[in-house]
Image (cartoon, rainbow, N blue to C red):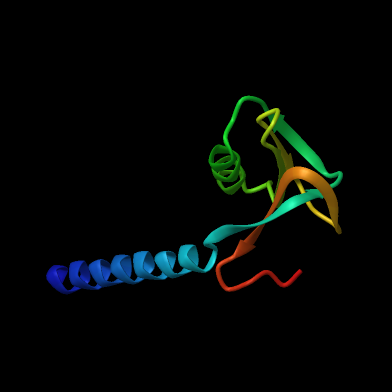
Length: 105
């Protein structure tokens, strides 16, 4: 009887972890960038002396970050809590975070 309970508990744990992995995969995020562009406003914070790849990684690692604007000349990364219309900005790189399946916005 104890063996059957242990086996059932093991199966429940496996199902739980398998289900958790599916949820994480559904929440996978990536960045789509636009050159010579800016998502104006909604500044979350800024980081200095970073590369574009570091800016992308920082935004993807912060659940509050939904977009960013990167200035390659100054090496500044402006993380955004939200985004609106893409504005032209010569030399800047704008990026927005989307779900792998696509963003409903």
